Length: 152
Image (cartoon, rainbow, N blue to C red; front, side):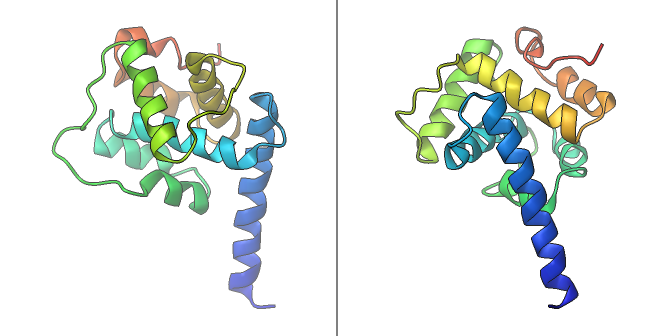
């Protein structure tokens, strides 16, 4: 087996472990495909709300596979394309993306704001520093900042 195959296997294993834990945190340990859809919807709604430079900082600690998912469909714009100002608007954006990515009817048994918070919390536990979370927080509307937990 060559080194690049071993490296790819390592990336796949790391992402599988992360998604498995996130699926458990969301209360659906057997729904890894749906968990990836909701992760993508949450992250794309944030990606397209924060500045490009913050997005680049945000993805730097992620495994290469999650970076790829984060950047799928990303287009450069001078200012972020989403400008939601309330939690309701962000939740609508996440739901719209979730539907667009193929998940229209799954009952998560949790509110969308809980799901967003769990996804962001999982990233802070596994990949992000408090400083990175602060950078995200500063670019979100005041009402939405409550979804981004602090470690303190």
